[in-house]
Length: 211
Length: 211
DNA sequence: GTCTATATTGAGATAGAC
DNA sequence: GTCTATCTCAATATAGAC
Image (cartoon, rainbow over all chains, first blue to last red; front, side, top):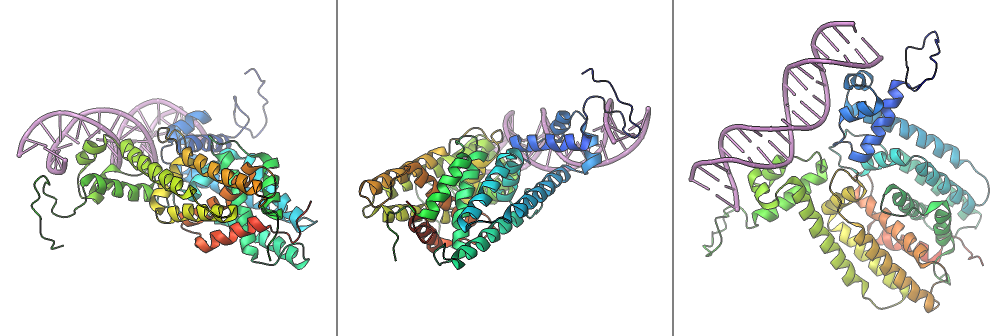
């Protein structure tokens, strides 16, 4: 409220908030897209939430679609970068897969609104938003698991078999956990739950392994 | 095309199709909702696809929302009924769970458009459509698996542990398989894939079970 | 860069004839 | 029950001042 205005040289008057208008618009858009859905979201509401008016939004992003594209581009970059960093690890194949999955789960946990918007676009109708490839994340994730699984099979830690099947099983479990934190009506399983479910997959449900 | 018109007593003129208007509207709505999404779907397009005009739709369903509700109500009934029938089975716990999952996967496989619409509503923004409880299916599915898993633990077929964890792992794998057939860009794994992934969970990924 | 004011289009819903 | 014609309103986007 009564913060003194610093007369920095190239900083224009931003009396209320330090964030740039562009950032405020993006945050507001994520919030509104998340609650109303992209199609039902009103540009007016986004602008008001950001404390500006509609023309400011159109000045920065060109269109409502442009706002969504900016959100998705940023999210895709952030997620893939975090995934690439998480891939390089040492230890047993089991521990490496577990750590990777915990990272991915944590990534969703700390970005629930963006993840929900991205999830809606990924699984939403193709004619709603223009084509935006979000499968890169899925591919990166799957190939990382497949590579670790191949290592595990080479050392004898894992039983032989299709590494793609292993990756699909792991990703299914993680996807299930992620959807439980994306959906309001379900209780999130938490990181501990992720580890328990993965242990189940590694060790098996039955009491005796078959031939 | 050239089917002779039967002059049934109380059947009004339906020259082109035998289906009642209500059914044609529902099918058309599923198709349009699936492609455009509920919010972006135009009532006019639904009516045209069904071969009628807008007032006919409003006569039968009252509103665009009413059409969606009719679709979801019918889908929920159909899915829960099929699930209840699939639960009662005999054999080992492993076989019962596998058969149940194959049934659920097949249910989605044979109703992809409806499943996509339902999935979009379930995971879509809460303020878009009025609240419609689709979690009943999830609950029914989970409890069925938990019950079978408890049986398996009682007979010693399954290792002791949380039956909820077993259910969540199984459902995650199935949900992953279902999403791969709901999404256009992924290759469906098929029923054979479902079985392979479940085998992986039952037998475990590692070569030796730990204490 | 951001505003006020407005253009323009499209969609949900309805009135009333048949 | 289904149609033609229309109402009403909200939403994207823009023009032009400052």
